[in-house]
Amino acid sequence: MTVEVQPVRGMNDVLPAEVGAWQRLESCARELLASYGYEEIRVPVVEHTALFKRAIGEYTDVVEKEMYTFTDMGGESLALRPEATAGIMRALISNGMLRGHRHKLWCMGPMFRHEKPQKGRYRQFNQIDVEAIGLPGPDVDAELIALTARLWSRLGIGRVRLEINSLGTPESRHAYREKLVGYFRAHESALDSDSRRRLEGNPLRILDSKNPEMSAIIAGAPLLTDHLDPQSREHFDALCAVLQSVGIPFRINPRLVRGLDYYSRTVFEWITDALGAQDAVCSGGRYDGLIAQLGGEPTPGIGFAMGVERVVELLVQAGNAPPVRPADVYVVVSGARASAAGIGLVERLRDALPARRFDLNLGGGNFKAQFRRADRSGAALAVILGDDELSRGVAALKPLRDEAGQSECPLPELAAAIAAALAGTVMPAK
RNA sequence: GUGGACGUAGCUCAGCUGGUAGAGUCCCGGGUUGUGAUCCCGGUUGUCGUGGGUUCGAGUCCCAUCGUCCACCCCA
Image: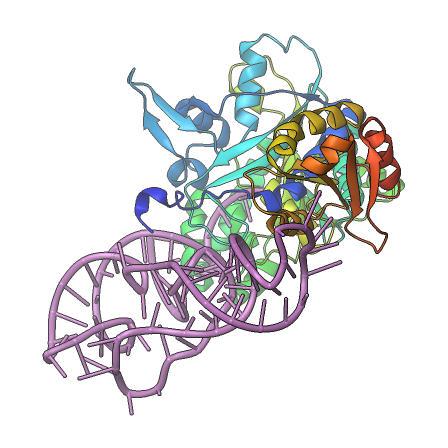
């Protein structure tokens, strides 16, 4: 295939056969978020590069090597958003929405990261992003997690489990980080090359290493959980208590750290064993310092991002992707007069039965071909209108999915007859 | 960014130690001058991912490149 008709690497089409699973997730999430009092916000896909550097952290992988950055014609450095939180916080500040107000917001759309694609990891990918602003928690932390748990159960997704941790305040995390670096420096000869590199940039991530040879040394490392400041400790204990009281199982993972710099205190991650190496389905945490860091009035916040492609994959694997819904009625026309009258007839049927799906044979074709199309369309019922029927003021009705015979029906009664014939079939969801 | 596997019809795939590309499916037409899933008959479809090289001759061997998948890394 020539290069210009290939999609850009890591950027995928969602085809009609797959789109049902996306719609189910989207409508389910919309409904659920509304029921928890969250409002939708839409923000640009492009922001100033500096915003992401400030928010996410200049020395994170996301900013350092994964951002789609470009200079626009005015000479400004802009970037395709690699995540949504920064843009939403910017919107709250630029629209003067803080001033002590609380906001519960969600946002859905594409994100961009220049990574090497693999299963569950794409260069353009979609997230459902949920943010609660102006609430210090831990009550909102627990509610947000409960919301995600409810989404899984509504979608019938079972292969996920929850891990939580607390990163403490920036101060306590900084103190812990010193201690951790000291420990790893003392064992530097035992570290692999990845871990040595992280010692400078992000020593907390060493704890997350997948290298089995590192597990012994990691097991001996000081734990973040043991170095929390008293308020963070209390916050975290309260969160755990609420989760227990509402019956959401979780595992405390003291090695759970997040990749973006802005997180503090509560972090959580829903992980799965069904997606290969990309096991994070939905993750987030508290970012109490972020808004102030961006120049807004100091305001606490917590949020999470859900990987839509990953959740859709789980939905499909669970067998809960809705099947493509075929037409209810296929209309076969024959002869010049009937062909011309066909569209008028179907338009009247659509007026009478707005929830039903009508597939009018388009593009001609002989009877055999039209019936073949009718069959393959999956329609339950064929309506046949030929010049003969037209001149007698009737149409023929033929059930395609059972052995009931063909019948004729006067045109004025056709809609009622179709409604009766389809009575046993599923009406489409709105 | 690093490593491994793989690219043959729209789709799923076959193609021996190099000899000039095949099956199923799909689609279209006919058998049935107005009746579909089966059956029978017929038909269309390929720069063998791309570009070089070796050879009398390359889908097959070599090199490069692009793409897909998987893992590392990173993360949703």
